[in-house]
Length: 282
Image (cartoon, rainbow, N blue to C red; front, side, top):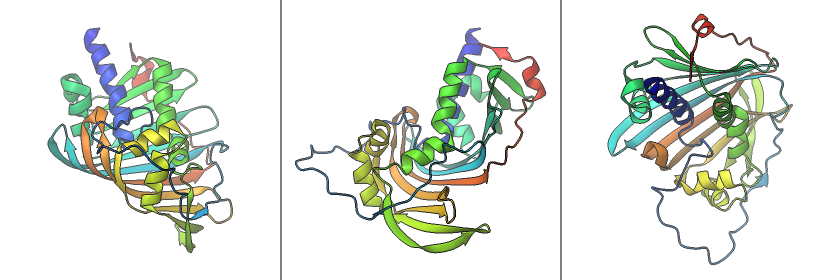
């Protein structure tokens, strides 16, 4: 049972860290951050115009993709790789997050330890259903684990597209310049650019504790490109590049982030695999 518990803990940590190692809101910390002097004056107002975002929290269902590319060090060891997270949610209170990519092995070894490392999974799925939460490791033989529902739910909420878009485009940082109107994958979008330095300053001084924590862990931020559906105002995509640290993973370096809504109100079915008919319970 101890082995199962260690395995389960590693999987949950893997999912939390692997998806958004730059913005899992409650975990990101300033341990590697460069020292900052106490502010002597109030921060200057952020440059740019308010961005007319429509919230995605009201959507009944969505599909989204999160791409992460990192180039830096994990525990002092040179690391370069990528992660892709595919997110699906529907109006039946079901959702699924699939994580894959070249960096998955490094994160497994770092966070999951030797027990999880034995499986060398090509992808990991996290399901949330009315029956509870399930973690599926897709190695040689799929393995399904039913963890503590509350912890799994919390992880899903933190890495959901709504959480990511909300943090990176919160009211404290959602100011920028409208570049113009473009067509992105057949959809007319308004292209906004958020100044990187202004974003960093606003995030570090935000009244939102989660956004402030994320900002404190950063050393620098490039300009952020945000694309809104020209008709609905929904955020269709976001591209950003950051340099900073992530203490739980002992990571420091550069990371690029791409978020994209690939389906709105599509109500994609989410079904548990056969391996979850007899899951391993904590």
